[in-house]
Amino acid sequence: MRLSGLQKEVLSLYRNCLRESRKKPVVRITRPHFESFVRYYLDLAFAIFFFLINIL
Image 1: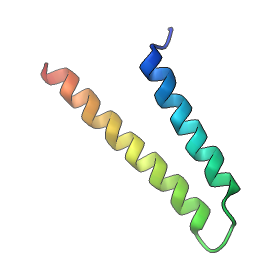
Image 2: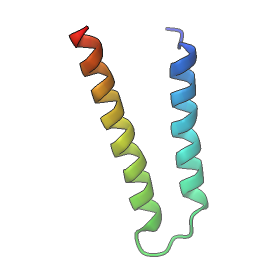
Image 3: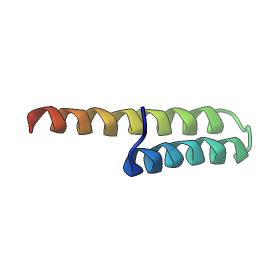
Image 4: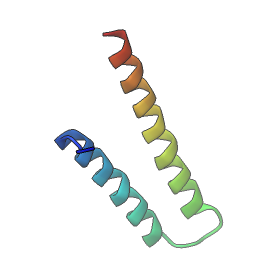
């Protein structure tokens, strides 16, 4: 399956966010919190997107 241009951009954004989180210092829960934050909001955006697509 080929990815569309938008899908490639979103995947790139996600990967870049996770890469940046690895640059953060491992102080308490900073890194894991940032990674879970990125995953949560990206999953939320996907859920909203698919919900809207199914409505139309």
